[in-house]
Length: 431
Image 1 (spheres, rainbow, N blue to C red):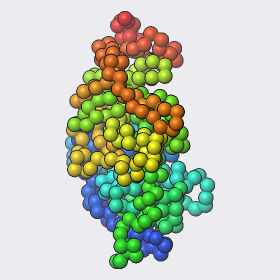
Image 2: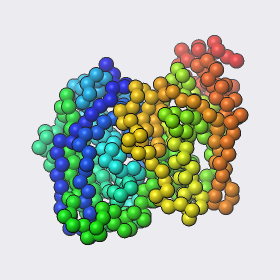
Image 3: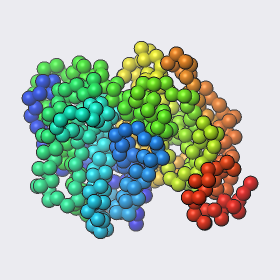
Image 4: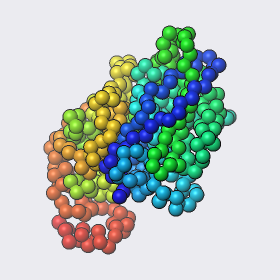
């Protein structure tokens, strides 16, 4: 039975500290002993972790689709413990490596956010592509955590002892040399190498190597001065990735480069007691449609889920990074507290992340509220405007039409990619 809704648990079975001699290094022992997650949480993590640069959401979404469909086929929907089924052993070696590595990154990301970290960016985005030596995967930050490096390791074939050596080596070579340094203006104070040992077909496990916690930190805090003041660089990269998935590459690139984008239109809906913004509509039958505000076209997408960002988070992020930055600080960016997030999800409703990003599934009980448009003012700032009538017209048009490409001026390329069965449905329901 494919994995579509069953919540999973994954335990941390071993934690090893590494003493650092780097100036400014302040360790933080992981406090999480077990992580809990739904399929959508892991799919969302895969989407956020797969690309080091801003890409079109239509590219990043299939990347997470690959993980989704592989996991669905090789993880059961019955047991509570996360494990990869023996069916995955039939993969070719290069697929096994890709599968284990991508799953390990997603699991490591979930471990970090369930341990109190909120925002993340790829190390390469902050440090640049140059430099010598091996580099970690990510830089994380949260309230009271300082900035942390994270490297993910994963294996389905290595024996436990050999794999633990791989994780230790990952810490020594990819984390420790960078501690205490300023990476893109962010001072990193500690780090983790998180290994996902996926060999067991009944119960996988996490093994974490981390910067040792000093007996008496010189600064008297686990968040030394300098680290707090500069984590806005991590936040900027975090929301560049999130908005790329939610709206597209143009908005994501503007956030990353500090540029003012053109007019940005979102669809606004309520879900789980909060207001959310997206550029996609999901029909009750799971069909998804992209609203393109540049061409006023509506296109059918094959993915039965979409990405969204919490409205309050988006408003402050736009103001902080694209508007009057002096009116806000990094601490003003809201986050969704762990007690509010249900890490196991609710069937196929979706998953919420602490930075305000969410994956919305086909079973999500949403209420469409209209359109929300951000328009630049010409002085580096912008303003928001609700457009309820326009969005309601588009939404009702989509929801009331049969399954078909919902625009007469649809592109010929998209039409030619459809199957004969789909064409028959669309032709039968022409309007």
